[in-house]
Length: 270
Image: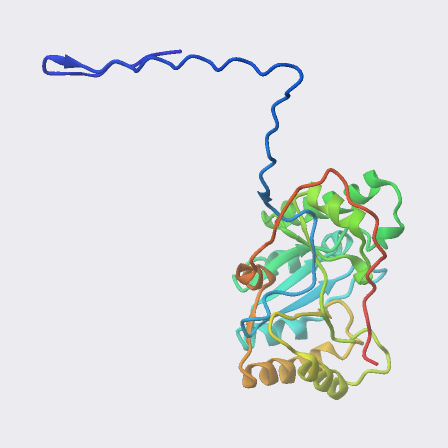
């Protein structure tokens, strides 16, 4: 121990004497210390933000597919209407569209997330190392191309369980699902039906999932009316990160590993 002595005029400060150590407890009476709860979230699966504020997050998946398409009309609408959004980027999609991803990263209203590397059905990937590799490969690709490190993970197909969410937390990712599926992958959904559905189901704190990698989806045609309708109803459109600023995370006890839970599967418009 290093003792620092401060001298002022004719007096000097000296450290107080250390108190004597208490006598150890006998073996028959072991010391018990109450475990204090830690403010944390143990591998959450986030489906929405606070219900107390009229904010909604529009999210767009860029899935890794055989064609790795890009619907620039979706992005153009977001920019023209000054609408923030969270874009969940697949690693394979990023490698097929590097310049487009770099362009997207330049817009401050866009937040980049992780949508795995190959768009695997994550609960069916039973090897934990492969799950982490899917996430970490996507992280590396996005970082190498943009310099940004995603904080949020969107499970492909909206399918996730406690094990996958816990593994994502080990990769410093929070799992973001959704509570308002737009239904845009449904081949029977028209732009009008999609607009009507999203506006009807919208609620404070909602996370809406759409896609930006399929030109045949009605997303681009429906998006202007969705944005206009939500704002007309008084909703503020924000990124997932901003939406979660309103969330008071619960106090919990961290656990080393999760109990397995049933997969949460994305819905479609009934």
